Length: 59
Image (cartoon, rainbow, N blue to C red; front, side, top):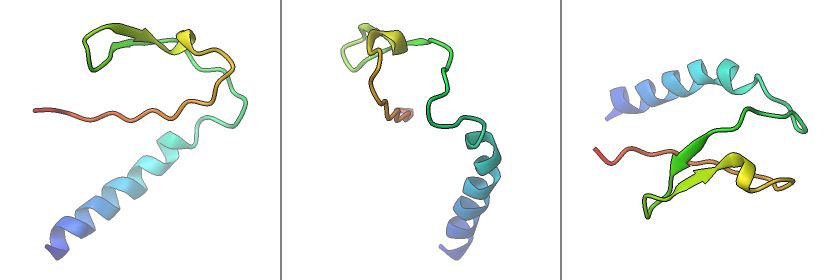
């Protein structure tokens, strides 16, 4: 169990520099992904809104 927690910590610290490439107010590239009903949803469908994106894998 301790090894798994240590691995999670290490991976999260390694991801920090990649997450730091954007600042508040920066414009990001548009992308489109399917939602829970398999309908396409684009980032640009929600202009001038604060977005919190969560990605997960089902398999």
